[in-house]
Image (cartoon, rainbow over all chains, first blue to last red; front, side, top):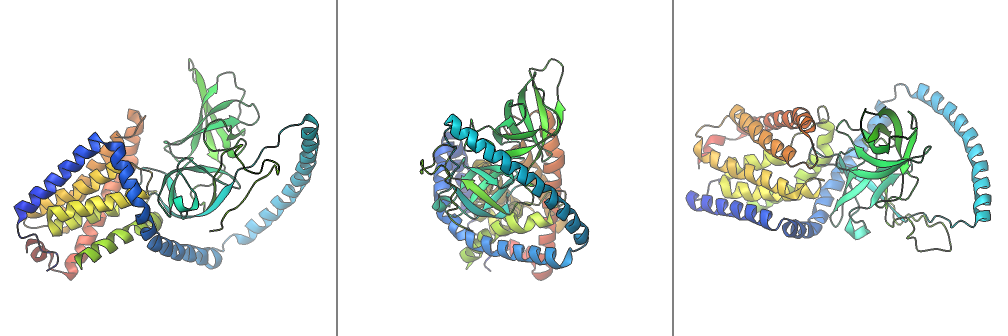
Length: 293
Length: 163
């Protein structure tokens, strides 16, 4: 019987206890060294786990795709009509913004502003969610071998998703903007007041440490300030939905609705170089998708 | 053979836990299959294998989580070890007793994780306990009991355990 107990149970018990005690002692005495060693050893394990992980993720994506294409078709016509209306409205906005962009370009050239170099990005697919319930995180199918490192910012064209906290050889873990352990430097676009964006336990986000004199209001957009971390300035984080201003408090705070629906995100872009570190200085714009998932 | 089984178990746990289980989550809570697997291995294969498998599961799962490595090692390894000890002491294990045991162990590990969260005040900790830790412990207990019941339909588990 392959599940039979060891022939010398007391010996095995002693060994097990000794191993566990040794592990506890090592974890308490050398926490960062042990963590670093196991993280290093985890690199090759990431490649091994990636095979079944990607296989199951692709099956999962295939089923979800079939389900959405053929089964969940209720209300598609209404949605289609609404989207057509939105396209019309956005076309109008687009032409206005093109005018504004052209004007800005002319003025920038006149003022000899240095063009902002956009960062280099790596495209990646979401292949899973955090293994525990305590963190809001996603798993990407790109890792160290693709140039991803901890603390890199992760975005979609719509806005900020989160930042990389862990990597293996072939995968990486991204802590979402809605996780309470995440903190990103934010800026209210209209008033230019800065604060720190942190996730809430309810799965939303909040902007903290806003100056008391700030004239923020519901509907104001919050973008990255570009001061701390690997996010360039101006990426949308969310929209203010409510303001909390308490008597006697030094700062006010506001609740945000994240711009990206992080529960449904499937593809993301990892910001590889931070703001201002792009290589082609003369080119001005350096938005390279190094690889496609 | 046994090593291969354990290897496949560890490799399959990650996609199951990170890709499939989110679809089966209830109120955004999913069970911790790693904890259930460590407990079952400990119960059937004694404390040393329970501990080693718990550590392996904890380590591999922590690579795919934003959580702390030490906590994952401690909880999964500890559960494997504890289940190994209990497996020797308890003569008759039923799916209900296993479920109740897993509920308690999951509750304890969840409380430990909650207390280790940096910067949380009492109200946040209480929120985590009632909306994450307790439902997950119930879920883990039900999953463990369900697995045990399914296995007991196929094998004579008590004989297998005492051999």
